[in-house]
Image 1 (cartoon, one colour):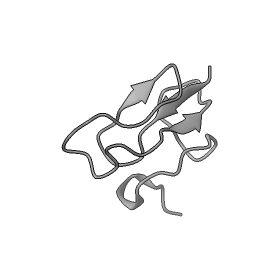
Image 2: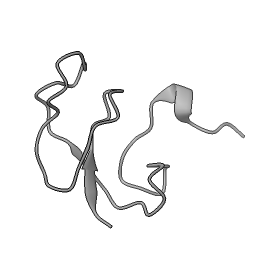
Image 3: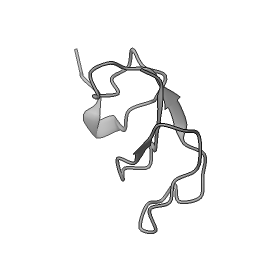
Amino acid sequence: MKHYICTGGCQGESKVPGSCEALACPENGKPLTECDCNDGKHKPESKAPLPPEERETE
């Protein structure tokens, strides 16, 4: 299901496009990123980039 997430670390998520509204987030006011993952984990198969600390290493 398509949804929109903040990639700034606040873990914000919305069903509609918009911008991050978390005051303490470094991405506050910036557009949310479209994501279509089904598991809610927003892993690389989604369109949202993951922060380095959440990336899986080989």
